[in-house]
Amino acid sequence: MAGGSRVLISAVLLVGACSHIRSAPSGPEYDAIVDHSTTLATALAAAPDNSTRPYRIFIKSGRYYEKLTVGKPNIHLIGEDRERTVITFDAASDTRDPRGNPYGTRGSFTIRITAPGFRAENLTFENGFDYMANLAKDTADPARFRNPQGVAVMLDSASDRAVFRDCNIRGNQDTLFPNAGRSYFEHCTVSGNVDFIFGAGTAVFHECDIVSVDRGRRKDNGYVTAASTNVHQPYGLVFLESRLLKDTPRLAAGSVHLGRPWHPAADSAAVGAVVFINTWMDDHISAGGWVRMSSLNAQGERIWFEPAGARFFEHGSRGPGARQTGGRRQLPASELARYNLDSIFDGWNPER
Image (cartoon, rainbow, N blue to C red; front, side, top):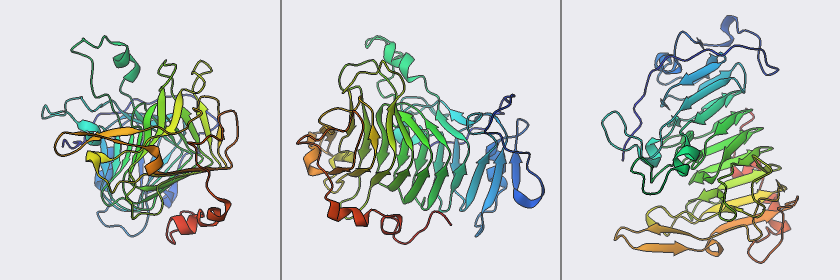
């Protein structure tokens, strides 16, 4: 499996005023400042290896074309402007790494977090691979990627207690990969089309906009989630008071599914858990909500997994996409009490 080597490429500064722009930092408020003359990778390399307090890096407005791994604890990234402070890279699964090997999904990330205590605020993370241009190529075109997955943010390994506030996380297929630990997303926008929020970690999305990007299909146009939660883990992907939106009015009604059960390597212990609570859903959400998914086992056999075997529930869904059908199981009111942050995060308070 290919890893993601760090690439250091100078950023291009964007200019212009915006309502999200913060005042210029000063004094001891920040430990490092990143602008168009340096890179975020340089600032991360200068951070202490085992800091027990937050190491705060202020990132000025600009597009920072970098591929990053954050392997040090308690790194906090603060953007000057949510829309204009952009960390981007354009690797997909079939993109070749510096050694000439495909990155694979796990290596396609723009930023990967492998240490606890990470926080990000007021910026954009993006996988800039041109998914739609690749999709438009003829299937016989040798230049067409067969594996176009491109991760923007990956939470992996020792990642835990990660917080994202007022951030955009953009991509297409496999945008956000919270695969380890606990993470909290508040007032964020996550966009993509196929399985664009997926993985085995415990992640809460509070008052977030989850935006489906149109692939131009009338059915099976996308899947919001693909959880692979371990059967012994009580919580997976939890959406609280959020909105499921579409990027264009042209996106076909009923063409996007709430999710499907991902079993990596057909692992029977990966029993995905996804719950939508008090979530508004536009009309692109399908009537059935959930669909089946297949995986190859170690012998190369294709195994199909049905949504009925996963832990997929809703409670209080509303909007034109909120339909109560036989396949869309409702969370009993008696279960609601356990969906509070203290219970989900086992005592960790992301507000601290």
